[in-house]
Length: 319
Image 1 (cartoon, rainbow, N blue to C red):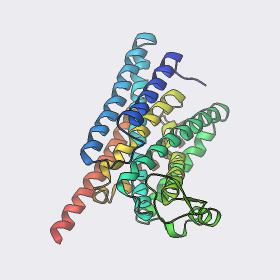
Image 2: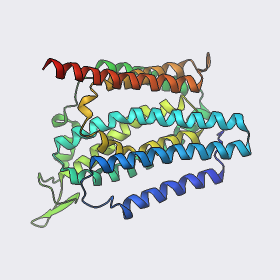
Image 3: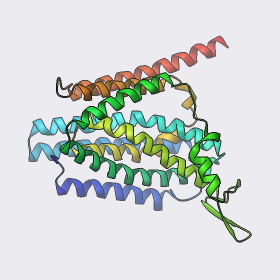
Image 4: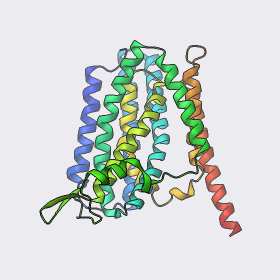
């Protein structure tokens, strides 16, 4: 498995993740009942993005001194491109989380706790999936075509059904959980389980957590192959993915109040998936440069955000 990940780079990356999670848990109260304000979410979003770009800078500096400028430029660009793609595709997670929290009526002060465990679960799941994917690619090169076709089809389906919302009331997993567990309709603070008359019950917070984890697993199936279209180096794939995930909670609380303003963003995300799928299908015919891919993704996302805001402005003016 070809990678630029030396033990120093892996150790440094692991240390950053552990330290930042520890700060979140024990310093800023990630495990306590707390309503995240827009200002707090904005500050943490800036911190996570800055930390990610600083990591890209340190990675470039390390590689420039150890293996040369050309490799350093290439790998740093791959990291930034993978990070942007993961960040963009993660916006869909935000829309789903908003829907889940609304459906289960999760109070704002309890949402941070659910997403904390959601992020921890996502880190573990994606680490396993990325190493499994990297191994499959080294053993079976043709699987890249499978990934490419899957992304293209997923993008088309996302574009076609962009305005449809999941029917959570008839969700098979929710029905199965309600049929096999004692579930109360009331919250018990930030507890996932509670006791009533000597019987243990799961709270709606537990149901929300299960669906948050499942939704991330589903989105990981899209986003991880998308980054493999940029690079097959597991170090770059994992680091760009995890850095994007670490900042996902802050992005959720930043966008929670304004998500409705980006009504056309899902179409942009669908186009990103379709572009990446085509890029992967053409990998042995023409390798689209990473810099060009970064530009295309940035333009698509920027254009969809601009179009969403223009649409909202026209609707407000008409009303």
